[in-house]
Image (cartoon, rainbow, N blue to C red; front, top):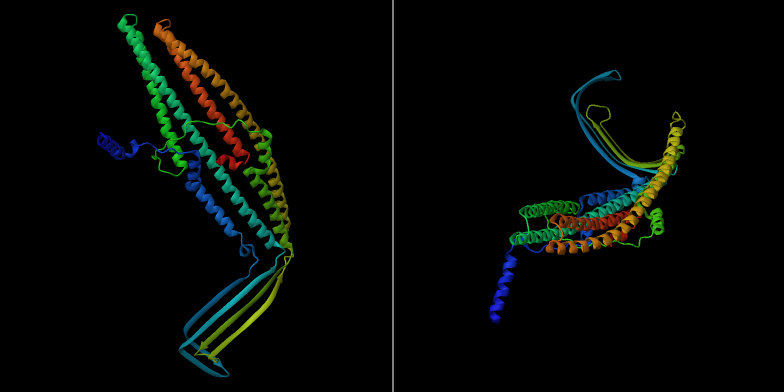
Length: 441
């Protein structure tokens, strides 16, 4: 007996292992895992990381102009020439005379002073790097929001599928009751056909919802940069945080919102541009030095051979005296750019405050709506139970029972949609307030 049980168990395991991949139990993908995969694999995030790396590479002393430049040059030229010339009353001519020059040198140039432009350049490169980092953060926040909403949309569709399957079971039970009534002589063929038509309508609704589930999973796989046909399951509930505080989130928005931070940095960049242009009013002082080697040979000339080597060092100072008032014009335009950056910051802050208040109000309404729809669902469920019992006893018509069934279905759908809307508002509040850590939890 024990051997038979063991053999049956082993055969069952082998049968399960031999099933096609699409028939095996699918892996449950948690929201945290989906976010982790997206942040690691999403192509847009990878591009943003590369751009942030470029901005970090650009912030260097050499790129800002602090370091000297050293150039090495070399050349060699060979010539064969015919020449006729007269010198000191004596005429000479050469045919096929060979000549050549060889030059080599190392040149050193270092800007010692440029009106502090190099300091402004370095600060600007640092701000551009910080802006790039914030843009990466913004892209990550956007991706986390998209993944979260896509994930909960799949949960919403799964819940609606469960509702539709339960509704089909009720419709099948209705048909059984109609068939029993018809057999007993108290029913009608018309009501049986109507019940079958309603069942087909319920099955069609289930098929449409299954198509939406497939599309929703494809969308999430795309966000995770995975093949669109990767199958997975999700968790089974939408948990809404009911304790979000308006003042805390609004205060965090003013200090942590990524878009506002980028706008604030743009103001600082525009201020540095004014410093850069003003630096052009001051002189540039350059230190130059070098080593050169020159050699020339000429078979047809008076000087057959010449070679020089040596070092050189010097200081160059230059200052712009007049350039058609272009410097003044550029400073004025830079000041206008800075003013526009300040206005853009204020505009961004006002827009974000307005969006926040609208989203927070939607969040509060969604919480109230969830409570209301939960109460409505309880009433609809009790109504359906009563209607089913009365329908069995024949005290209500098939049409009245169908109306109770439809009311219950609509109540269930409204509740799951209300929960989803509340989760959307919650996620958008966390994003706009810059609470990135809470979005990952």
